[in-house]
Image: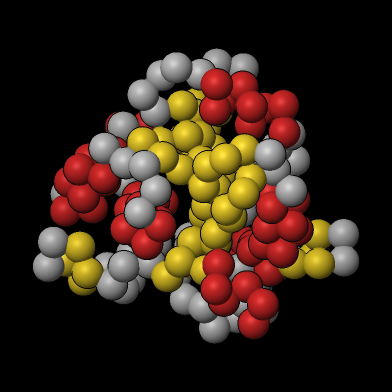
Length: 165
């Protein structure tokens, strides 16, 4: 078990999924349970502290409410209530947990293995993102709290590509 905080990023628009299936992807059935619940269950067996970052808490199980981090509504006097971006979810997680480093994973990444997580965490880079076939997957990775300065700047400048970190 990893002695660090894990946050499942679940605050996106799910725009493609809403068009195709009419549902937020976090709530898609995944082997009999909502995808977010499966992710939470799996990651809770790997990490000591697991949270779910979401735009709101309304649709999640009552059992989960203590582990849900609601996105910040304002960042540097900018209204973020209509912003659906991983930058906001990550900044909100650092603000809420007070953790010095957090392992982030998208709600739509249910097949990530404990071995892959271990490789990412053991990497000595400043921000440790998943890579597959030469492609960076920045919503899966270990980030240090010092990234908050960059996240705030990205939100202020309406730039949300995590590959900019």
